[in-house]
Image 1 (cartoon, protein in one colour):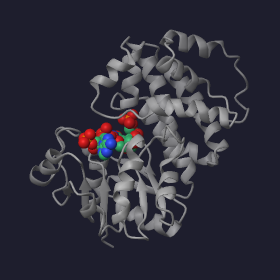
Image 2 (image 1 turned 180 degrees about the vertical axis):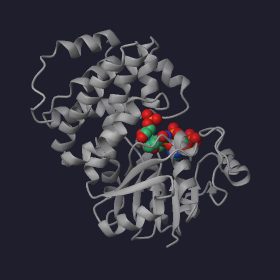
Image 3 (image 1 turned 60 degrees about the vertical axis):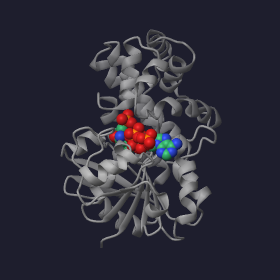
Length: 333
Ligand SMILES: NC(=O)C1=CN([C@@H]2O[C@H](COP(=O)(O)OP(=O)(O)OC[C@H]3O[C@@H](n4cnc5c(N)ncnc54)[C@H](OP(=O)(O)O)[C@@H]3O)[C@@H](O)[C@H]2O)C=CC1
Ligand SMILES: O=C(CO)COP(=O)(O)O
């Protein structure tokens, strides 16, 4: 069945997902930047975020939130987490009552510690909500490389319908009804990507990266399950899958932040030089509070936080991790 899809956010991921859904559905992408909208409509490109990528010719873009969402059968939010709520509020008066809202974002709101689907439920109660997540580096999907993702929704029937909307030949979408776990997997792995980036930038080696990924998985599983996610979810695409892709890829913005820190640059300079979002930088702050709230030990996240915000060096971080007594791998998390 062909649906009307309204996607908010013309960055690298919002544009990528819009180009995928435009293959089989009528899709409108909202971007606030007029030049981006004009370029998508006239040249089928978004050169700011996806240089060199050719977008689906059926994709239409608009600077009007109202026009993007008013006839939509599903709304997709590709807005970075710290701006998610303000854009959703702007769209709210124009959204029909029953329409499902799917988040693409992998972060937590700094001021409230909320997940994006919690924000949707708070701002638009009664709408089915979900998240599309997984190991999905936008630039690879544009180069025609195969990838798998998860659509997580509590309502299995809607999840199955949306599975069809997002799936294309090379983009394979699975369903999952653990929204909390899927959403937390995507947000928490970004901190681990900063950690492995730091190691890679400082030439720490492949063994170190593997140790960080593996212990990172146990760390994010510990917090994720304490917050209500299912353990099994963290070993799936939204957990381990995304963790492995992001922690080992120079295409990841979070890995890039860590890498440049590992090479000696300051966080301020790195952010200044970046045009795209690295969600893990803010998520690291939220996670320190969540770790306290849920009484969960998060040693890797803590060391990343200290480097980002307390002036510690990458060497301090690795020394800090090595000082911790190594327990048994059999223990929970
Ligand atoms: N890129 C990827 O590979 C993937 C990203 N994600 C997640 O998707 C989410 C979106 O990221 P991504 O597309 O990569 O981000 P980008 O940094 O590529 O783009 C950000 C987009 O958000 C817009 N934006 C920023 N601030 C505001 C605001 N205050 N109001 C309205 N629009 C705003 C930008 O508009 P403007 O250009 O006008 O500034 C731009 O369109 C993130 O949470 C990310 O973690 C998930 C999977 C893969
Ligand atoms: O989430 C992503 C891939 O799944 C994208 O990661 P970055 O935001 O670090 O680029």
